[in-house]
Image (tube, rainbow, N blue to C red; front, side, top):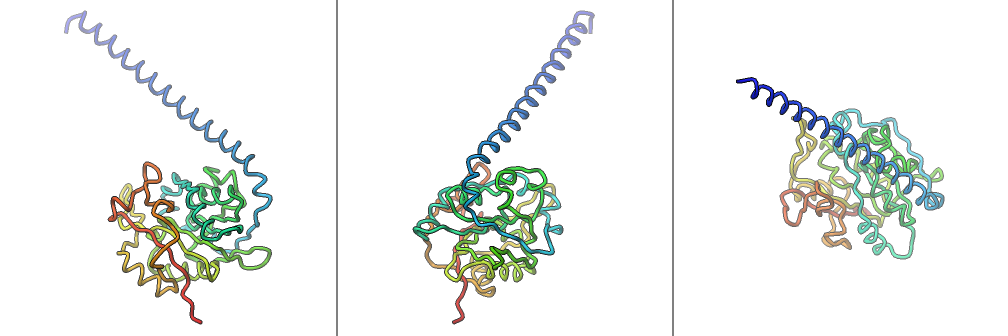
Length: 283
């Protein structure tokens, strides 16, 4: 390499180095702007929903297990770190099923709390329980906006929710792609908790994934079975799948392509299915 070629290489290296530094600065600036925008929007939404919160029931949670410390979802935060499902269409469907009344809704495995926010925004009572305290600690998503309506709890251990000293019961209990995260040995206690907190005429609604979710060698879906298996399992645990639903496909919060990461169970049925169930009556 002659002197001119060596000099040219040095200049090119300097240009590339400065370009990399420039790209890094732009990336950090964009990340900072996105961070600022997220918090500014949180401030605005906190003010907008303030009046609704005044008219919401306040719930107290009683549990000896405030965090699901043995769950991979807590040990290796992933869904709880990034998810914050919103779906006002689901709220409207529930309003049509229970017309002309204020609804009460319990979201189990609520992650960022978006569904709870949607119901409160429409003037209903809602509470979300999440097994990991990641979102609470980091004040992400709705945890800083509606903090009294989002609580942490291991839902596979006994818990009680109270409303004015009475055990709270809800019109709707929902679990969106959560049941596949629950080990079979823990299902009985979970369903006992649901049965305690759902009204006799209430609906248990949600989605169940049929595929594993593996990240960095960690599996997040320990319970994978067919819809038929789940139907039988629900009956063993005191609930029954309904043959028809007031919900249309698009009313479901997950499994409808709701966001870039959400599967569409209609076009890819191997990914999961939706359900609506009620408690089995033993009259």
